[in-house]
Length: 609
Image (cartoon, rainbow, N blue to C red; front, side):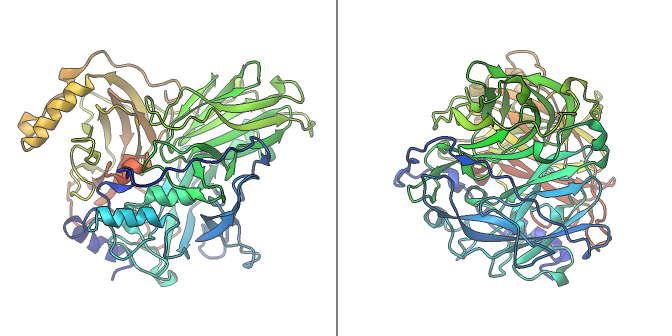
């Protein structure tokens, strides 16, 4: 029956041929008749940085798992002292000790702190209004593409566990959406369906990562992901390894998660969605506040930074007013890497970084500004709003005790094991294609709703090549897997785009497919320093480059003894650009893991194809 894992699998084949792509041009098409709003002038550094709330697990529901209930709600929130209070969306966690006191902020959601290899089960519930926070944009989408959106609906949601080693029915795939009125998308799935109301879905997470890491959860509903995340549907998900205690890293109040985004505001304090008209929003928001400050002690801090912007790539540095303060990179998307000292770092949409910043290296009373520079939006050559300053750290608090953390240079972090490749390692190519400026972006000239064309044998290793002839960089996220960036190779993008378009227009005969190797303009180059030998799930596919990554395709098993919670093959996941307006504009494709017999059969994915 629909609503169970099995029902979702049965709906999968129907979704291939009978369900339209809900977003053709998505929210990225642009509409000249929509007025562009600019945020009124704001005084910087007058609001303290909110510390993210931490959800409290209930360990009595599922044996051997932490259990949470998160509800999507619309609530008031003030982004800045000089702005009014406006309506936002966010996640609120049930408090197992006091049901009348849910845990949340208003904007974004509480942080889930999990233990490595100890499962988590989350019941997601939506009680959002049936009118969207950006209803004018949804109305415009319905007007532009009346057959491409769920009929008579304005709000639909699903939650993706970004970076997780997660079975497909719990991954939060685009067609797994559900609504506050209990309407379900064609791929809706839930664990333990007897415990899930129609406006709920229960997901299980393995937390089986190689090391501690910062993942996140966010909305992933087909066609309106960009609107829903902008409205506030995102939150941090930290996985801790008990073995980390020996490492000597900053912890407690000295470990600070930062959710970084850019937003635009009306004078009354409400959010203004302008990304269908502009390349980026105009105001930095950190943990829900615009231009916040944080009082710190003169000691080492661990900053866990997530780029939750829809479109913006940031290039970050710490400025003392007289010089740049170096920092240490100790981790990326999916865990630790060897410590690397840097003075700045590039952070694409959905990427995460784990930093050690030593504020004892500046005088007491100094202000250290987190700056953004040389990162136009769209990156690297756009003309969107510039945001040169983000937040401020004020070295004003006296030491509460000696800093006994390990100096970053001597940290003994878990090593990254290189994924082995041979001359026989299979390779797949994905071309970022756009026929004309008015057409949607696609991988390999295929829409999202076209059947999966990529079948990967379970347990295998593959190299994927993202071929980007477009003038902007695309941060590409691959669900399920951690990968390593191998290299990039420059090629003549305009020339390749021309012949590739001709090939598509002539019917895409595989025998005549153009070879990007014929357009190389130089040899391969190593990954950026922050990417080298790092655990990643999102990669910056630069313009005019072939970006090569390597990954292994294993699948998760049963979670907390819950029936049907593990992966059944074949299982479909997706990869997509994490510029959310591009994702909604069709730059997203399914791929499928199959058994050793290659049987494609009925898919257990429950949300894609």
